[in-house]
Amino acid sequence: MTMQSPLPPKAAASDPNARSSAAPSPVLKLAGVTLRLGQHEVLSGIDLRADERRIGIVGRNGSGKTTLARLLAGLVAPTEGTAEISGVDMAKDRKAALRKVGILFQNPDHQIIFPIVEEEIGFGLTQMGLPKAEAAARSHAMLERFDKAHWAKAPVHSLSQGQKQLLCLMAVLAMEPALIILDEPFSGLDIPTRMQLMRYLDGVEASIVLISHDPAALRDFDRVIWLEAGRVREDGAAGPVLTRFERQMRLWGEEDDLSDLSG
Ligand SMILES: Nc1ncnc2c1ncn2[C@@H]1O[C@H](COP(=O)(O)OP(=O)(O)OP(=O)(O)O)[C@@H](O)[C@H]1O
Ligand SMILES: [Mg+2]
Image 1 (tube, rainbow, N blue to C red):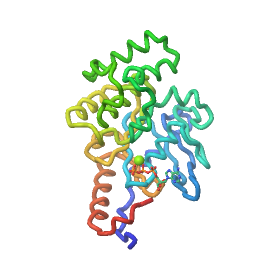
Image 2: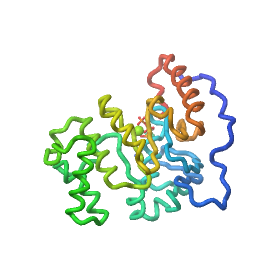
Image 3: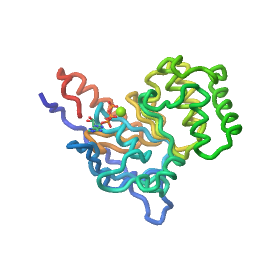
Image 4: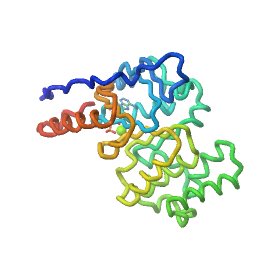
């Protein structure tokens, strides 16, 4: 069965992508981005300009959120179009891409490289050119910030899944990138850690793109982009976009056919 739910009308608010051409490079600038992986067109014709500091991305499973995050981090190049972060073409300048964007993957096991906690946090810092002693000091400061100084020498495999997620996050934050992309960072975290993390993110100067299935986590954001089947379905102020998103999710949830995931 295909889903026949009526689509809610598009947000009629002023176009958040419209900017004067004289303005400096926006943090995010995607022009005509299409990405095909094998036979599958995973992202289709995405145009986006964004300068907001807190941008949320929502969408069903398989709608292309993680793929878009990977593209913004320069990990995959668009098949067509261009993706720039603060004026840097992410597919062309890998070095700049690494410096500018920190990404926290959905699954921490895909991210962690080193066996010991402090090594994992320190690695990115030494890659950035910091002397070892300074990298170690910054790693420890980050651990202390989250009350985890006692983790420093711990083997990574001794951490729980949520603890590994927090470790990856600390490794990303320690590098102080201009843009931080977080792909479902809360899924494995307990409530106090989640609250601690949200408070921390509130104080971070970097722009943040947060992918979440939890609309409540994005309510205070400056802007929310709703992806559906690889396209931007809505893009605008968090309140109205999330309200329509939640309504649509409930409508789809009331249907019985779980096989009809958007991918
Ligand atoms: N390497 C690949 N080759 C072919 N198709 C892919 C590849 N990676 C992802 N896809 C497809 O792209 C679509 C979008 O995947 P993506 O992981 O970006 O979705 P998502 O919105 O992050 O979903 P979720 O909410 O489950 O994390 C899916 O249909 C997926 O099967
Ligand atoms: Mg995903």
